[in-house]
Image (cartoon, rainbow, N blue to C red; front, side, top):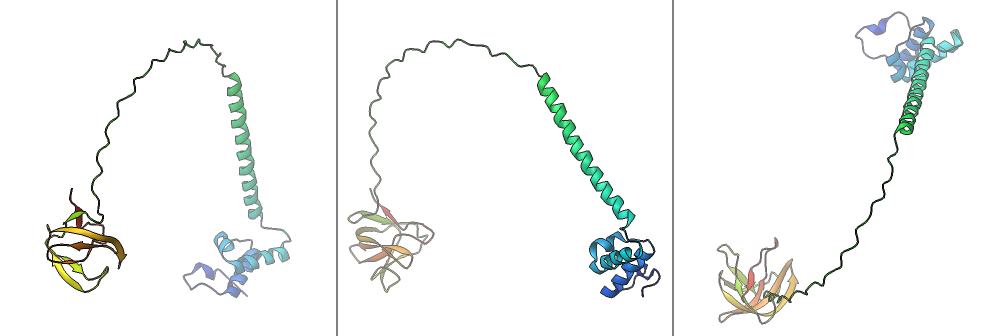
Length: 206
């Protein structure tokens, strides 16, 4: 059986049975550790069981705590009712502004708006399509590889930046790139239209 106030020392946390005995001991001696009662099941179980056997009624301090909670709830409800009554009183005392009828001016007679002269549409910029001349760009000194077929296929040659080519066929998607079949005086094959990041390698000439 639990005896004394050994739980006030710095010894390790007691077992479940010891916590049960501690709760029973505190109940018999009219003592309550609120922290243990809220956080340790066996302490609360021992305390409640001992209270029922010895006293036959709950801890007065627990009843006082319940009473405080009920009192706070009643005060909160009363406060809300008071604020609602004050708000209703102020609303009833607020003067109602009269509605003043205003005379609307007669609508002005619309004047005919001259139709604007048509603006010539700008000519569409050239785009990559078969038969268009294109310029090899944005290589930063690296060559543009000419492949045998669309995709990462064997190389037939390389083109330097600034080379002019004629687009013959495309575009064809392969290996993540768009490919065009180009033709130059020295070589004919497939080249990538741009990088994976979207940087174009071919720019149509006007």
